[in-house]
Amino acid sequence: MKEKPMTVQDTTTHPLRSLYQKSVASYWNQEKNPVNLRLGEVDGIYHHHYGIGDVDWSVLEGPEETRQERLTAELHRLECAQADLLMTHLGDITPADRLMDSGSGRGGSSFVAHSRFGCRVDGVSISETQVAFANGQARERGVDNEVRFHLKNMLHTGFESGSFQAVWNNESTMYVDLSLLFPEYARLLKHGGRYVTITGCYNDAYGLPSRAVSEINAHYICSIHPRSSYFKEMAANRLVPVSVIDLTAATIPYWELRAKSSLATGIEKAFLDAYKDGSFQYLLVAADKV
Image (cartoon, rainbow, N blue to C red; front, top):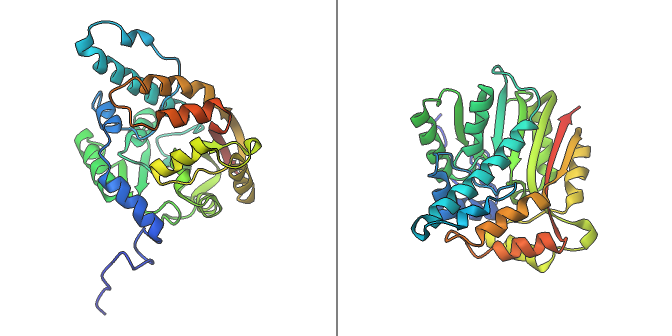
């Protein structure tokens, strides 16, 4: 019997299962934002997330002709600090373990994890452009046998059950329904395996999403979840939090510096307003599968 060709409409095989997912994939397929690309060019690690930590404000001093170069390097240092923090919460990882970077972007966090733990890492993204870029990076680094990127949907990856010691999302959960996401992670993780997310979420105590949070949603065509949804859906899927860290104060300096950069995208004020008025929070949550 002749094999049926895969099309976008063939939802049994293709990662895109809704018009919204197609719009998200299209956005990231076309995305060439300098705030992602220029920072990655500093050392070849391309992240798609924000930063944490105290800013070295001396980067604004010195020769004007190299000011933006210094500022870009400092923004990259802060985003690398965020990735390093996530890695420290993945638990006791050995070279024999397998990890999944869910919503892997251009691959930065996957390469950080492989360098740190020496284990196999599988990244998944619904963006063909991102997957191709990240696999190219893996080949250039000579780690393509251990770090691989797949055109897959994080809601239905097709990987074998119980095949991962740890799974993480780094600022990518706002693109999916959490009630569909966490059952998939519970399936993929081994017993005692670890799930970690760093994410922005709106503060339930504030009420509904603030105007600034709505601006962020519109900018990134995403849907930021309330804080409570994470804990509700984790509890429903045998994911028990072991660490919850409020990183809001730690990320504000990154945004204040980014607002002064030529790489600013115009969304910086919305992030700063939302963080400072209490309507938006930046959290790290680590949970074990029980």
